[in-house]
Image (cartoon, rainbow, N blue to C red; front, side, top):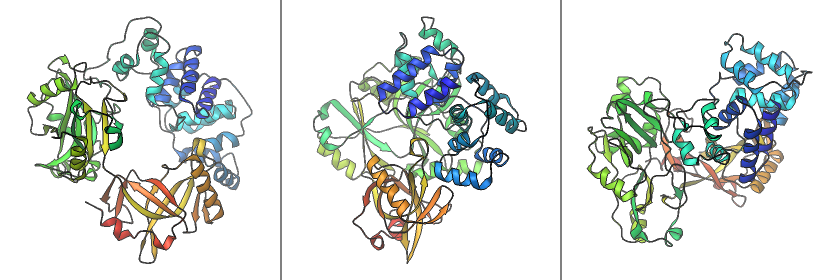
Length: 516
């Protein structure tokens, strides 16, 4: 655990991307199996362990530490795992193998788990306790993406990143066949039918950037407000994956039933009623459900709008130019009216496309996708072949009401902000945002919170309603679960309105009037 704890600490406090890659590569090269495989799985989100809840951890602390001391310490530190790691009164400092910690969290029954966790914490020093608790809670935020981890692996041997990504979702921790391949062995094959293939992603663009490109070299299509998915039928084995490779087949049995083809297709998952595409909020009601009842299937029918073909009739099309894949797509027979093809847009200049983007035929369109005609299908986010030109975000001016300490590198700052709008002479909370500001603005916001606190609730502070925040968001739905009656998609702080008095912030009705 000592080397794993050191790895997490160095990654968390290293900002430069290439430096992070060097740190991870050195760890993977120097750490024996299976510990390096379990560490890699933890960092990439592929290590599935028994969930350890905050309630369980607080219960352990109640047996060890004065309740008031713990509350004050947690309020100061702002991170539960770090608070426990510092306060725990263990007096040993063993170098426990990471595989032992993984085995404990994988194999221990629910009843025995609290005692086993206490015994493990007793054996560890503070840094190792923090690493173990991060592992136990799944909070591994250290600024390293799964793709960066695969880049580090690619630097260790002959396999390229695209080769690693092709087989990644067929592997399981601790990845012994993968490390054998990197060391010069044979390439592992997919472990099961209907594997997930890496999805090609786009980069944001604006009109000024587009003017440097030739519109004749590109095609464009609408960007629909659903979720990007990959649908696979491999010799009768049918799967539906999110763009990150999560199997969501169980939530959409109606779509699985409609996969009457041989291949892998890339598209947008939508709720569709006839020719009409429903707002994202309707689709959201089906996401994450293990069982979907007949009433939900009837009221919220799902379908696919196809963007691209990856595998078709036993042929891998990904190396073909996009225009050739598109020609095959236009002729494809999917065997179901739940699946159709995303239409291309007719434009000759970027100004033509801008006019289309400004007046889409549906409120469920969130912009346009732009793709080079000659682009192969490459997993990941290559810069240049594909672009997304999203519609301008919605914006409101809201008042900060509450602030909560962040986690990880932000644990010393108030960085999560709840904001509200006026309803009569009362401020009603409408959302929460924790990004969109610079590090310098974070320090200014933290200073404002500390100087304007009116009440404290553990790591949360109520602040005087003085500061106006300009909040940008991508979409809006009516919601019976929220007191305000609305739910915002991807809210973020786009500007701090130090200049604007709080009484001049927007009203709740203004936000409700934006609902499609």
